[in-house]
Image: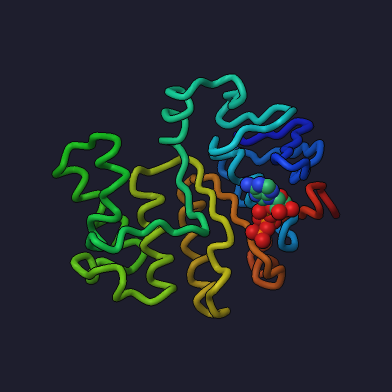
Length: 217
Ligand SMILES: Nc1ncnc2c1ncn2[C@@H]1O[C@H](COP(=O)(O)OP(=O)(O)OP(=O)(O)O)[C@@H](O)[C@H]1O
């Protein structure tokens, strides 16, 4: 489902954020990505999402070699991926409902079916009663839930989350992880990065550890 073979990512300026990295995440797995700040977690997730390209090596997602895909094929591939990234990009001039509707608008979804899906996603994350609110009125944790609803509304087969619990207290972080677990339980492949190893251990899932762009035990 996700496979890296000898992947290196070099940023302009000569920093190798990932160095000859190889690993595999099976379809339907939930895996954590751990490592200190600067270890390469965000870079890895950006490569899986097709936002950046590897400098060398092969990135396979859903059996497709991302290095060989053109722009249109890459956009199509992205429709199977849900992203919860650090730079929220919530639109504060639109309601909670409209924010979650956005990905379906872009795909050109039939409006009535789209509205049903938006409400189902909001219900799942516990924000259905806030659909008309402006996101500015949501707490940090609620905004994170909004981002998760927006990431899953198009029912992706892969869900990528970059430190979704970073600014949340332990209890709230658990609630968010439980949400990811519930998506995984219905078959979604989930890759989540986090700093807090104690939190990750609670879930008994595989942990991929990165240090300076390498895998570490
Ligand atoms: N756009 C960029 N241009 C140049 N260097 C970058 C860029 N993005 C990241 N880097 C560098 O690549 C390395 C890995 O960064 P990355 O953001 O992937 O780490 P991270 O593990 O996600 O860190 P954090 O937990 O702080 O988000 C760091 O040394 C970082 O400074």
